[in-house]
Image 1 (cartoon, helix red, strand yellow):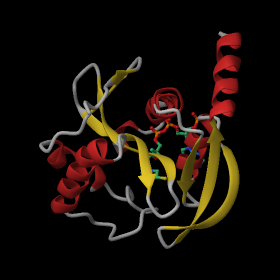
Image 2 (cartoon, rainbow, N blue to C red):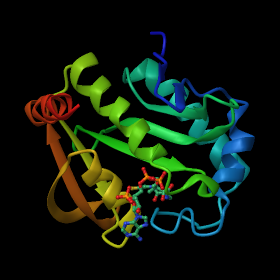
Image 3 (cartoon, rainbow, N blue to C red):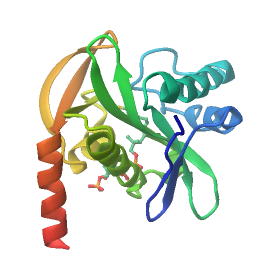
Length: 182
Ligand SMILES: CC(C)(COP(=O)(O)OP(=O)(O)OC[C@H]1O[C@@H](n2cnc3c(N)ncnc32)[C@H](O)[C@@H]1OP(=O)(O)O)[C@@H](O)C(=O)NCCC(=O)NCCS
């Protein structure tokens, strides 16, 4: 299938391309970026290349995956955002990572809304989860700003992670609330 692209006020969410790996490697290599991820804190370029290839393939095999996120104004790659299928639990997780230089501007939350909307309205999913290391305050805050509900701390990927959920009905209630306030 063709990977859909979306635009928000400041972002373009588009399919990954193999050549994104170099820019992505620079982004994930910033100090502390992978502090709450499994695996070595200093990633290799090969790992970014594998990640990009995996995302490209997932759109074909699963039907959804992460988007490459770029700033509309400049075309600069700033990270990833989107959905990931977890084969062990058959769940769909929303995940994100944003260039450290751009933290705190609401960009991740802006991109995250697209993944939720696409998952529920485009793919017809009934539930989307989010996972964050309990000490990853910024990630937990983004997840909460996206309207997801804390469930419990439990094991995923060999780590104890805070698990959040959002149902399709909950997403529609949140959307209705936002448009009422607008
Ligand atoms: C998590 C991450 C994507 C957030 O990106 P971002 O673009 O700064 O996110 P936003 O600007 O949309 O929102 C961040 C929110 O977290 C808040 N925040 C930042 N650090 C925080 C902390 N230590 N504790 C609690 N809240 C924190 C910000 O104030 C902001 O909330 P506000 O809008 O209410 O002020 C970014 O920190 C990142 O890429 N981290 C490394 C990768 C990662 O951990 N990804 C998540 C894996 S689960």
